[in-house]
Image 1 (cartoon, rainbow, N blue to C red):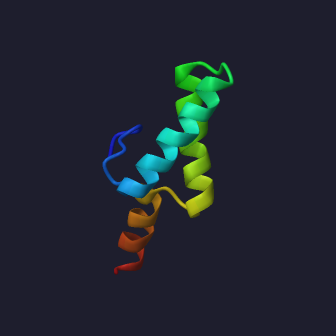
Image 2: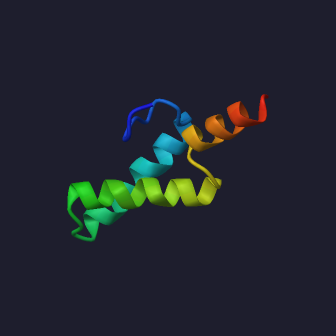
Image 3: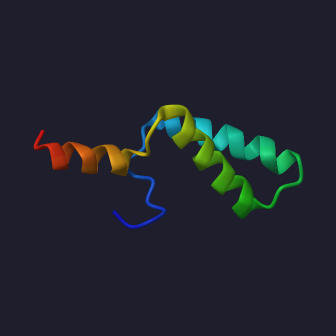
Length: 62
């Protein structure tokens, strides 16, 4: 999966990131920085980004 690809995220995670990004934009943060912060927050809340979970599962033979 290419870096920046969001296709493996759930709809809920995408909604969360969008709302977090909007909050940062209202605070005057640039669009790019707001998006980066939003996805970092979603990843932190959920433990791992989907591509890492998928890779771990593959490594374990599941």
